[in-house]
Image 1 (cartoon, rainbow, N blue to C red):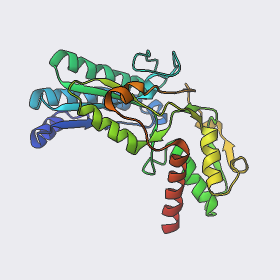
Image 2: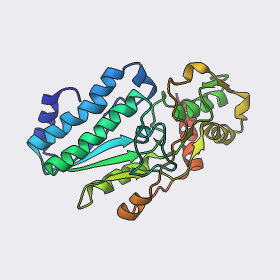
Image 3: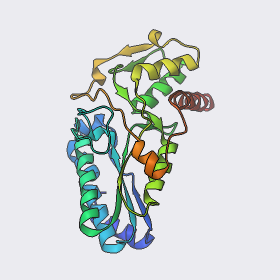
Image 4: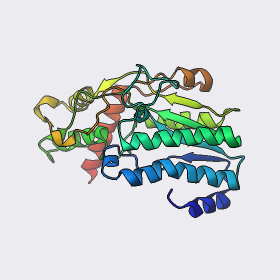
Length: 264
């Protein structure tokens, strides 16, 4: 994403009809440690990819992975496609750039370019650095006697968590539309990190309060406390809605980590 020539080569070789940009420095916490490279990849990288499409394959349909982190210090609840952005991290700021450059290429060059504003989407394949997977991996380790506690930051942070598999279907649906557009994919429900812990630990017969330790080292310089998406446009236009609920998602992830550790 930092090399224009490689993106041009990729478009030349693939002659792709659909391009999904899921490339990013996607860990919010690290974006304060490496803000410049986060901007290069998550912001300017989108421009490079769009420019490669414009030059090589302007008829290709483009999907940009935007994010609920663009809302940051939220101006309204729930957040819709018209809610103003107020990012609270270098990651969120870079993603706002990516959103608007996608919109700009759509309006300036007629490219079928859509932004998917995805709220938190999780699965057993989530990286261990993310709080959801950190919790489910920690639960599995504690249950199997491989760890004694789990250290987390703000347990009261609220997020709109859904299953990544459902959201990928939504991405695909966006590029099947006759006209491009911007859509929120979300469950329309919010849950705290504490609730996530409660379900995860209880699923294996444990009480989270006996194992979870709040550690200030995991607090962020500028916290995003509440994200809640309004997916009504996606439901109306794309015919999309999530199939996996919050409890099913948490339990799926715990089961996967227990099975993984048992097999290791």
